[in-house]
Amino acid sequence: PPEKAVQQPSQVLQEWDRLFNPESSESATKSMEDLFEDLEPSVRLLNQKATEMRQKDSTTGRVMLGICASSAVEGVETLKSWVTNLELPRGLLHGMDKDGVPIELDGAVYIKYNSGGKNK
Image (cartoon, rainbow, N blue to C red; front, side, top):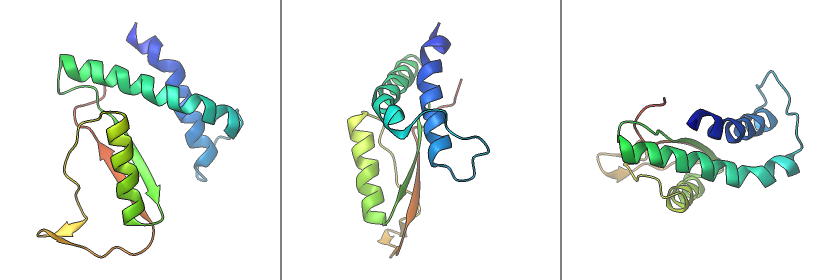
C-alpha cells in the first residue's frame, strides 16, 4: 500500500525537523550525519509518490516546502533549485512585490512553497 511506502521517508523528515527545530518538544534519535544520508532519497521518494497522485488527480499529491534563508535572493535561488530538481509545479511567488514593483527585503526570509492539491 502507498501509505507503507511513505512511512519511513516521512519519519526521516520528522527526525530532521526535530533536529533543527528549537521549539520541538522531542529530540532527534539519529545523528545529523545519518539523517543527512537519508534525506535526499526520502525527499525524492515522497515527491515521486506525490507526483504519481497528481498525475491521477491534479487536486491531490500536495508537496509543501519551508525554506529559511539569510536573504530574499538566497531564498528564491534555493526555492528555484528545489522546484527544478524535484520537477515540482511552478507557481506565482507572493509577497515579494507590490503591484509588480519588487519590495526591498532586508535580512532573513522564510518562503513557503505549496504545490496545490490536498493531502490524503
